[in-house]
Amino acid sequence: MNPINLKPELELPLIQLQNLQVYFPVKQGTFFKKTVSFLKAVDGISFEIQPGETFSLVGESGCGKSTTGRAILQLEHPTGGKVYFEDIDLTTLNKKALQKMRRRMQIIFQDPYASLNPRMTVGTIISEPLIIHHLCSKKRAINRVRELLDLVGLNPNFINRYPHEFSGGQRQRIGIARALAVQPDFIVCDEPIASLDVSIQAQVINLLKSLQKQFSLTYLFIAHDLSVVRHISNRIAVMYLGKVVELADHNQLYENPLHPYTQALLSAVPIPDPDLEKQRERILLTGEIPSPISPPTGCRFHTRCPLAFEQCRMLEPQWREINPGHFVGCHLVESSENI
Image (cartoon, rainbow, N blue to C red):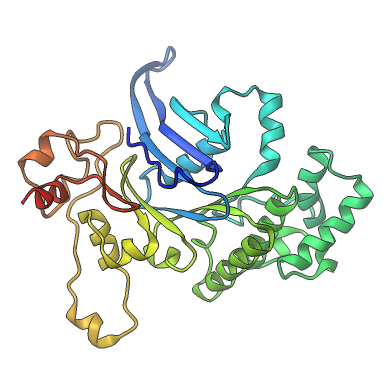
């Protein structure tokens, strides 16, 4: 467990995770399937998200980022730990109470092609949450849908069109409009630009930033590319194999990355200056990500870390605050501090 209390003097965090665990059973057998082990998708992470901030979660595919976002929304029920929305523990709520809370929490899915029902019109897709939460009549919902389409930069007259009539960027705007329909406080952005063309990605990022300012939204922004999150994030957490290995303000993380995994990710981010790009060295990680069914002992990154030593293989590093607001779990950082 790595508890973080970044701003105890400020208002209550909007989202607080305490030792969150999400394990999926691995079963074997033809007829009578027996649980033989567990896939540890999220294995004891803790952090807070303050009201109005964009908290980014970054890491390679399969590290548990999306599972963390889904567990916050209770789309995946946690195996252990707590998820607080303000002072409410979401893990203890029944189905009816959770449905009421979900009006305040929404998600923008990664794939705009799979997340929109092809049999429903845009108007039906966006108005569905309004009807479910009894926020307005069907007649009023149509007017609200037109307002939302205009808000995300789409023609309000598109209300009777179907998803296949739109491009990927337009579909993602429809997904954003659907998330905004119930006027939430918190939105999980689950790699919302990963499947979009580079020319469209900046437009969607700018739209999210504009909407956040306009409606005082709080984001959990999930991505696998550190270059994407730099200009949208207040704080960034780097995740590897179910664990958060580093967390810092976005400027601190880019200017002074402490964990070798963060350094490797940042070395892959291109620099717009050709001369500087030629001079710097890429950190190439060897091997594959270990299986989350049987993660390595000690530091989970030691099997791919170019700086690993014996202690990394034996002991799990402690989660420590190295500088104000800058947390890291790495034996190498601990050793350098003691010198």
